[in-house]
Structures are given as C-alpha cells and as structure tokens.
Image 1 (spheres, rainbow, N blue to C red):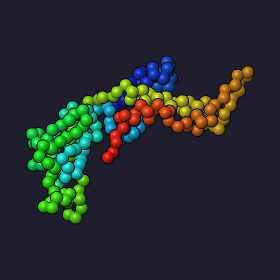
Image 2: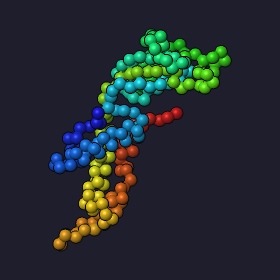
Image 3: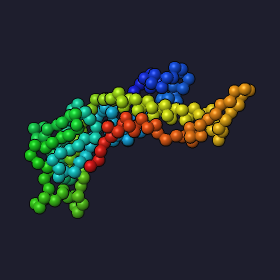
Image 4: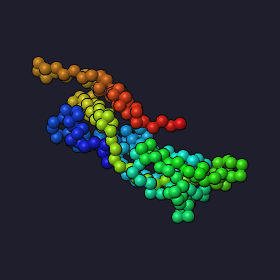
Amino acid sequence: MSLDTLANVKTRLGITTTADDALLGLLQDSADAFVAEYCGRDFGGGTFTEYFAGAVNVLRLRNYPVSSVTSVKADRLNVFDSTSLVPTTDYIVDPDRGLIFHRYGPFVVGDAVGRALLVGSNATPRAVQVVYVTNAYVPSDVKEAYAELVGHWYRHMKTLIATQYENVTEQKAGAATVIFNKGQIAGLPLPPDVPRLLGPYRDQVI
C-alpha cells in the first residue's frame, strides 16, 4: 500500500496534468520502498511475522502502532507449533511503542548457567516468533517527505527526457534558450527536507 495517494502527491508537487501519472506511480513504488528501508518500519500497515532471541524479556517490534498481537511463540528448537504458544497473560503489549514485555523474565529460559539459548553448538536468534497486525499510520510530515522524494526523482527523470539522455546543458529553439542544471542531469543529492522530516521516525538500532 502506498504511503499516500497519487492525487495528494500531485497536489503537493503542483502537478495538474495526468500525462505523467504512470511515471509518478512507479516513482511512488520506489519511494514506498525507500521510506520503509530508511525508517526501518512499514507505515502502510498489515500482518507481520518477526523473530527474536529467546533470552530476553522485552521484544521490540519493527512496526507500530500495533493494533493486535496474533500470537507469541517461544521455542528453542524453532518449531513454533501450538505447544510453543505463550499465554497472553504472560506478557504485556505497549502498542504505541511496539514493545512486548514478559511478566516473569526471559521468553525462553537459558541453560543452567544462564547462557543464551543453544541449538546444537550455535546460539539461536530465532527462539521467539511474534505475529502481529498494524493499521496504516502515516504522519503528515512523512507524507511530505514522501512527496518531496517522488518530486526529486520526477524532476531528474523529466530533465533526462528533455535532454534526450545526452550530456546537454543548454538547448536553443529560436530566440528561447533552456539551461539545464548539471547536477539535475546527474541526479542531485536528496533534498535536505527528506532526511529531516523522516529523522524522528527512523529506527534507532541499539
């Protein structure tokens, strides 16, 4: 699901024609992927499955706010069948921050000396499985950054089309002269507003 509608993106960019709707739609697809990767979360909502190490008592979900948790399963052998289901009474969900707290300690207890879970001779980072659901939640400043990104790529593509993909910086037609920005031809860096607006929503890996 796109972070915003094509109509809203065009309004933000001041585009009033439908001639480039197909191009803008493709650029939206790229912008959706960029924002998800840059922020480390999916604002579009959906059902997600994530895995965590077992010797922890707090799980930090990638996507939030969380509308519901379908299941939490803990299994040092990574089978995750019905017998590994963690009772809902054993954990607390903080939906706004995407956190799941175990009430009584680690989701899966380590060995006798407290070491991390082992499968054979290797520690497993997939001892806990969480399936959960989020609703679409796209703050307006994320939508603004999204439109800025689409517009940035759109201007670059339109410049390449106008120069017929050649290294042309100036065109003359009669008395009219069109000068192309060299940076726009090459592809300028991201507009500074994009990282500024997305920064507060970026996942900070600790």
